Structure formats: structure tokens, C-alpha cells
Image (cartoon, rainbow, N blue to C red; front, side, top):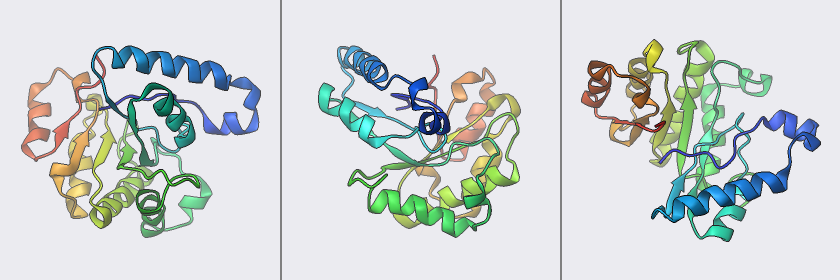
Length: 204
């Protein structure tokens, strides 16, 4: 439910493409997916979003060559930074980008995103992180698409993330707070579950 076929700096890949070996990355992804398939895996939910090097054409190549279904997302993976393009636009404008990915297709393709991704980490829920969360929430309310939210239990980001989703009217049964398995604090994890979300136990 949470696996990245490839995670890379899209800015470096664009500006210095020779720093990455596309074929080696494809070969490694195919090898890993085939290994997972040998254990019965038929579907991989890939939450690679903006700033993680999302590339649905790469995902499709892996899917075509392995027969495993790859489910892409939309959203922004940032612990605080927003490019001026989004910093200078409001929450609804950001949400429209996500809605387009879900309803029309990603990166000029007909491949549509099936869920939304956002993140909060050591810096906590900063102003920019909150903006992304609210845009993701509004896109979820508009489309019904579920949300996967990267979290950091060590600084207890989960409750605030859920609070934002609640304020925006998200169906919490369609929310997963990722990386909760990083914590051994069962009271913290059970507190999230009590709100009605799913928790991701995803980094063993």
C-alpha cells in the first residue's frame, strides 16, 4: 500500500539528466516488482508526488513489463518548501491542479491519479504544509479520492493533520496517516485510529 518504484530529485534529473541512469533505475524497479509479485503482490500503491520525481510514464513501463498494477497519486511532498508558483496562488488554485490529475490525467497522459499525497515531518505542520494539506483535502472532498499523509510520529504530526482534514470536511474513513509503525507509542496510534482514519504500518 506504500511503495516508491523510484524516488529522486526531479530538479536534478531535469537539469543534470546524466546524474541518473534511467535504464538502471528501470531495471532495478522491474526486478523489485517481479520479486514482490513472486510473493503474490498484484498491486502497488505508489505515493511518489511532486518533489519525489513522480513519473507516470516510468510507472507504466514497469506495469507493462511486470503485469503488476501501479496506482499513482497526485499532491506535493514537501516538509515546508513551496515554489513561488504555488506560494503566490491560493489553496483552491493548488487544489485544482490535483483535481485535474484525478479527473483528466497526469503529466499530459490519460493516466489518472487515484489518491492524494501530502506530508508533515520534523518541522511539523508549517504554514506551507498546512496549505498543501488543505488543498489535498479540498481535492478529496471534490473528487472522493482518498488521502495518504506522510507523518512523523516522533513529533506527533498526526493529530494536527487529521484536524485540518476535519476542518475541510474530509471523510476521515478515506484518510491514511502513513508511517505510524515508526512509533511504539500505542496510545498515540490508537488515538489516531479513534478518529476514524487508517494508519500506515509501512516501514518494516
